[in-house]
Amino acid sequence: MNMKKLLSFALALVMALGMASFGMAEEPIKVGVCIYQFNDNFMTLYRTELQKYLEETYGAQVTVVDGKNDQTEQTNQVNSFIAEGVDVLIINLVQSTSAATVIDLVQAADIPTVFINREPAEEDMTKWEGKTCYVGADARQSGTFQGEIVAALENQGDYNGNGTIDYVMIMGDPENVDTPYRTEFSIKALTDAGLTVNKLFEQRGDWMQENGQQLAANALAQFGDEIDVIFCNNDAMALGAYQAIVDAGRVVGEDIALLGVDALEECVLMVSEGTMTGTVLNDHVGQSHTAADVAIQAANGEEVDSYYWVDYVKVTAENAAEFLPAEE
Ligand code: GAL
Figure (tube, rainbow, N blue to C red):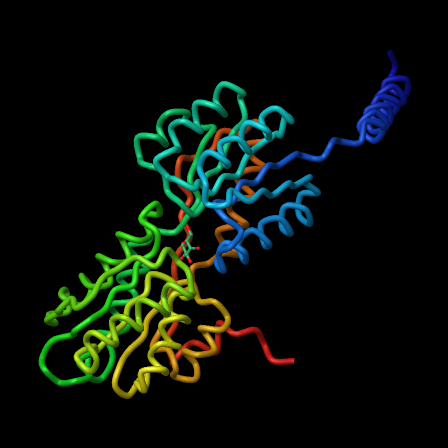
């Protein structure tokens, strides 16, 4: 073949390939997303951003389902997605202890899976390496930040001046390791700072605002002015606790401190105005984008790491404005 012929052959080949890939317009990647329950402030922000990003960035075909806080229901949803033949699953487990069972199902169907928000046990993440992973934030960090915010206050959280930080702990659902970690590490940050602590009350409110209000009201009725600080494992419960604090005639920043986690916009606004002492940004944008990017890689047959971590960020009166949407 002379040079000219070779060139026109190469050109024809390039055009043929181009047309072939154009003609067989690629099928969108099908993503099944299982959320532990839709009735959750933080996970609502998370799933909305996740779906939007997958559709806008990757043109993916996304179906999001509500596990209604029922593992049996969620396992059925996983089986339906498998039967439908999705390319990849993103799962926010109802029970993190069900990870092993779910991994057996997806592995048998050869569907890579990204776990989010509720971290499975470490040994589960080694069952099907390269094809399963966890995307989340290290909850120890969020607890530590809550405690550090209190330790940095002028009175170091001792509002009644009795020499100890008398606190109330309103906890999330124990199915999420965020609950034990935030509960432990918020207090550890205080004791690590050399402060004396005294636990007055500790109960679970399962992330829900109305439970936060009820539990804080109970604690305030029982311990009154003894309470220096109310720690909540998330912002929704802190919003409830705030109502109870107001109803009890107490004033955040004057005679009591109130802490949450998530940095819901409402709470960031309260922190900037001083009606909440502090919160911690649980970066749903960073987490959902990472989960989506990794899911698409896995759907395209690439191996994934076992863990992808996104940082928490402290939100206090000093920096709260940075976390609010810019004013029009
Ligand atoms: C936490 C979050 C809570 C709740 C929970 C659900 O990370 O702080 O508000 O959404 O996840 O598992």
